[in-house]
Image 1 (cartoon, rainbow over the protein chains, first blue to last red):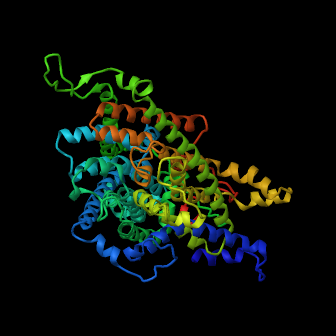
Image 2: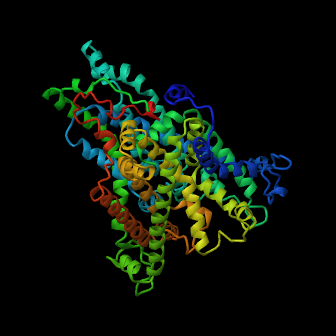
Image 3: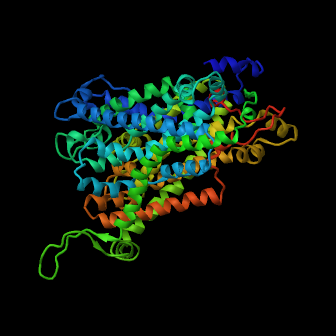
Amino acid sequence: MSALTARAPVRPPRRALRPRRALPYIGIAVVGIYCLAPFYWMVVSAFRRPQDQGQNSALPAPWSLQNFTAVFKPAVGFQRALLNSLVVAGTTTILVLLIGTCTAYALARLNFRGKYFVLGIILATSMCPGISVVVPLLKLFTNIGFINTYQAMILPSMSFALPLAVWNLTVFFRQLPFELEQAAMCDGCTRGAAFRKIIIPLAAPGVFTTAIITFIAAWNEFIIALSMVNKKEMQTATVSISKFTGAYGFDQPFGTQMAAGVVVTVPLVIVVLICQRRIIAGLTAGGVK
Amino acid sequence: MTTTTEPDVESVEAPARKDIQRSGRLAALLLSPTILVLALVVGYPILWGIRESLYERGQGLDEQGFVVQGDKFVGLHHYLDIFSGPNSSAFWNAFWNTTFFTVVTVSIETVLGVAMALVMHQAFRGRGLVRASILVPWAIPTAVSAILWRWIFQADGVANAVIHSQVLWTTEGFHAKLAVIIADTWKTAPFIGLLALAGLQLIPQEVYEAARVDGAGIWHTFWRITLPLIKPVLLVAVLFRMLDVLRMFDLPFVLIGAHKESVETLSMLAFDEATNLRYGSAAAFATILFFYVAIIAYAFVKLLGADILGQVREQRKPQQPRRTPKRVPVRQEATV
């Protein structure tokens, strides 16, 4: 909103809303509807009663939470799936940030030979298709008994999360005022102390944004979680939702799936909306998914 | 446009020779964990996958009728199978599907994304709202969006209700491809829009004013000024989107299903082979996909000059203090 007030004086004041002026607003509305309509449909479908599922009305006729209670029935095991997702995505994010922050600091701050080579390598690994990593690791993990464990999902997840985090952090760190650090070092701080006392507090927002982006990427991961796990108790939420089965064999329980989708998505959407400015800065800086 | 002119701080940085050497050691220390992890979770699997693709899992019987244990070296057998042997029809189908999805979805997404960016750039009110809504498709897990679209594309679902038709979207056929394209476009066109918008906001207003003074029309301005100026940003966005579609797995897998000829991609094929314990041919498929991706990435960087390292290199150049306020704003937040 502050952006609006800042921009307002730039535009010449015009009272009458002529058709040409209205065009951008129509465009905005179209973009908004384009982005939100399917999501809206998921939410609406989640709140229908199971017997109303076939309805195509814009709002659920009687609102109902039956789909949500169905999701959290013990037989479905969705709580466990959410916990698994949280463990996998959370651990991946923490590990990646611990390793990635150091590396990004070096890449953003230090001068050394082969810097662009290292950056290129890191970026190249992020382009590598997931399946090329999954197939060999699947065989390896089968042999060493890693299948159905958290580490079997966390380790491969780092293959895409680490380049993503390092890249984002490097771009963020490049914007830091490093002369403050130099000033601290002039005042007798060691490099380590300067890093701790000056850079970390300044870098916190960038690290936080990267954490969100990495977490979302790890949370949304599918093929690794699908390959490395064949026990229901170890499935992550995304895999679990895709494997929901209806009470009667073939009919797919869409109502329950939509409710589960809402449960998985809405927290992310809320976090994303709260931090949208920073996330957009991160995404446009990253260029990587 | 709020162009932030930053005081030139980069020029202060004039590191002494000794500092560089100390930095080198520190850098090695700080870089090694990342390099190590990437070598373990990316480098090693890819190399191992290439080796694996030359072996066959011991599952046959020898002349005496004993089960042969261990892997058997079969050379390029799997590759021959894939390119001209029994696996070739499945492979070429998946290859064309993958290529088709890549070309079509990325083209549509780029056009739509640029259009969205132009719309968002024009509008001054409601920009915050639309910027928020544009992040929603991005934040939804692909698997969940696939189920959502499967639900929309049901026989009696809302898609058919809206267009008054009876298309069985999720069955075999061209409409299944269409369903995948629509679902993928929905999820990722806004993302390209976001990147393109960031590019648009770096174009100084003066350029447009100059064009208007010279009598350029809207169309002319777009082709001659806007597009060339956002090309660097767009190239990188398109490259990353292409690499993403080339490895597409979860969307067709969940939206249409496994073993569906019309949407099977290379990733799905490799996954299928691996889950059937045919690691050798799975690894061969994965290796082929890897090189396909590598070639496209290389072509983009070398031939089209997609500057993927631009974000970090840009500020490395020693910037001469300039009086013109047209320098690229360094801080992203200030511009969005």
